[in-house]
Amino acid sequence: MQQESKISDITQPAKVSFWNDPDKRAIVYQVVTLGIVGLICHYLFSNTLANLERQSIATGFGFLKKEASFEIGESLIRYSAADSYTRALLVGILNTLLVSFIGVVLTVFLGIIIGVARLSENWLMAKLSALYIEVFQDIPLLLQLFLWYAIFYENLPSPRQAINPFAGLFLSNRGMVFAVPESHPAFRYVFIAIIIACILSFILKKWAKQRQDKTGEIFPVFSVYACMMLGFPLLAWWIGGAPTKMNIPKLSGFNFDGGVSLSPEFAALLLGLVLYTAAFVAEIVRAGIQSVSKGQTEAAMALGLKPVLILNLVILPQALRVIIPPLTSQMLNLIKNSTLAVAIGYPDFVYIANTTINQTGQAIEGVAMIMFVYLCFSLLTSAFMNWYNKKMALVER
Image (cartoon, one colour):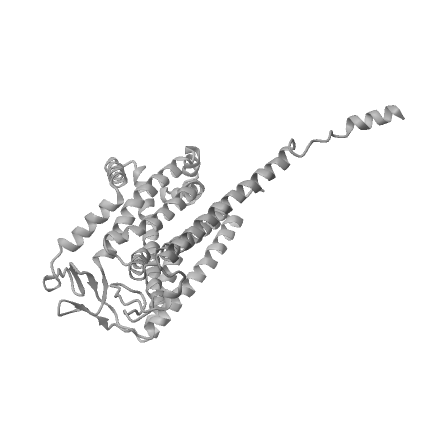
């Protein structure tokens, strides 16, 4: 019995005091750290409220219901100075979304082209791509915005002497104005036809992939895509009456009336963001393509695939797994760099929020809204890219 008790004493772990237990000690450290952070936050919050009360500065978001009393040069929705600050800030959000979405699409497209051209066997194309990357990466974005704004605003003539390269297009220091089709019910059917074509294209892509996995035969997906994306809208336009009347801009006073206009501020901001960020995306694409072993290319060439098919079917699908994570960072950088729009007067969310702060004096609430809005933009972009990254990841069998 004594021998069994000695064996049980040996096998049982020795009791460790609370402070000498690393797991329990780690919990204590975390609780203490959390308490210190909470006390610091409470001190800063209470001190801020006391200072605001001492200076008789109002707090809260009640000012959002008040009349904004300032005009906004560009708006995707109807807005006037008699509208509330809420609607003014909504205009800023939509303007930011517009330039960010178009900028991301154009940046990815241009970055892929330059990245592939950087690896071209054509000496001139490779060197020009490398020169583009070096120049636009090394010049600060803010200076590029100033440059493009000066070109668009100061070097173009007034609306009365506007450049008219062809009918329906005018270039002046007020921006670019071009003709668009007049509103007609047929264009609703065209929009519906585009949606249907996109859905059918998605279904066709999945079917073509399954067919290729079973038979090994490549279905001409791109040609069918093009036929559906062009044919369906044209058919809907023809069924709707084939309207051809255009809304042509006309000079009225000191500016143009009609058509659609793009301001110098929007053009300068979009061009600066796209050209600057595309230089970094091009390097990401180049690195991703070079990460694919040459044996993959040689194997594809041995199968008799054309260079375009090798790039689309062999190299890019593998390179995307390397490209997507840093590409996400560049997309986020473009969205956050759009805040520089305030330097050239484009009414994005930061510009309108700053105007609101200057009028109401509620800087804390204004800055908090700016932080919250851009946090939402970044989280939504990251969520989408993470979903796409998981979709492109290799699945182990």
